[in-house]
Length: 93
Image (cartoon, rainbow, N blue to C red; front, top):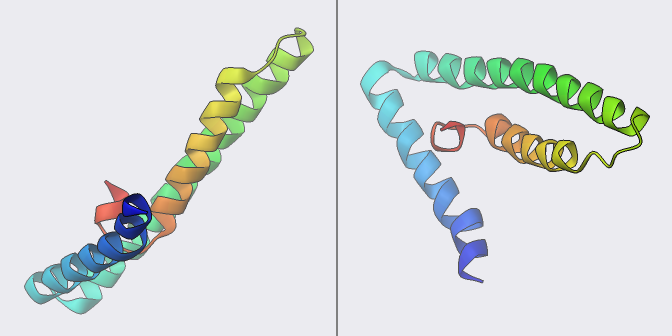
């Protein structure tokens, strides 16, 4: 329960606080542009890394091996993708 509380209550509140602080210091448009830019860069990096992981997994399968490391990397990439697409600065770190 405490972990869910942190993920679903504390993190979004911290994100909102940081977004408002940054917007107050540099302006709302610049803050919005920064958030969109980090999302776009994150998507590009995830696409590249995801494709690379998929190719390595296919190579392992062709060799008759279980692509265990690639499966774990794929799951971690999915979590990283969700965090990068979440608006804010805290989840982008």
